[in-house]
Length: 409
Image (cartoon, rainbow, N blue to C red; front, side, top):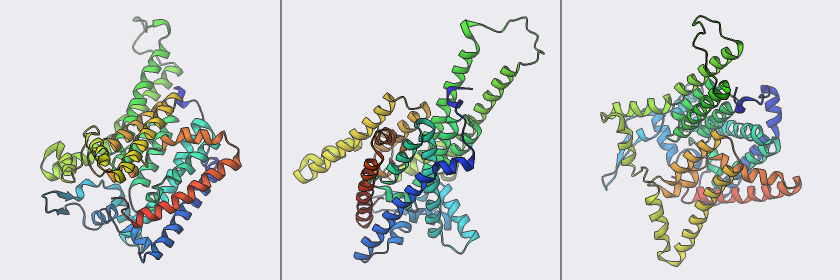
């Protein structure tokens, strides 16, 4: 056993009862956001449901579900937008919903996101409750709900599904359930490219656990005596250690199969080998350049006064994200959370295209909210409720404005 596994997880029924306040609060915030969107859309003579299910990436997912892979759009500038850029788990689930019900693929995407967002909220609560306690768990879930771009959690996008899988995978790592963590990491890897962050959390934590166990089993440099017969029976402690090792190895083997499997399949499908997926992303002008393109995008905002304000806002936003991560490090967040958040944040901020999508790409990085959740737990309940309620209203209004305007791509 490692220090990550020493706290027993509650039973399922007990866990659901414990999470109920967080889930009810989350549902209320999301309902407020949907009502605000419906009212704003009606005032602008737009259909709120269409905004949630039939625009931008949602259309690409439904096309994959309906037609399979191979659809692409060739732009006038020579770029090729291929639906191979979109990972398959959400379209598979949309197809499943359509196969067992009269719902459309778009309806299926909305239904999957609806349930996945609740599963994500529960997973976030489970992680925060395990690390910091119940009140911090409730606050973390509500903070995730009131993100300025929280409306994405209700769209037929993959953010909610990915966050649900990632959160429960991290919880499985924290509670020493390595095969479960491996399966969930596999599924997360079939959902979004950032599934690599979950794989990294599983692998790094497992390797550190191996090292700790080896050090604990050999105090003061003790070694197994060479005269010990090979056929000697293992002691109960040694047997338990071997079982734990096997469990960790199984989790590590399972974790990367989703991401690796899809990327290799794309390479085979395109005939471009293991790096074929990178060519697909290049067709969307998307890649990883260490943040150079984003830094240049921000710098260009300072060429005129109105846009300079946006530039300042972007700098403040990025600085806030980095600061929250460093606070998490200083507060000694568990290793899997730090690894996961670090990779998600790096991939979001250092991508070379679609700069307006960066707030959406950070939605799965929920451990960034844990320092804020801890700060809220130090306030009186009435004051923290007032803060969260005010932010929820602002988030609902902003989400309605954002989705009726430029919105995500």
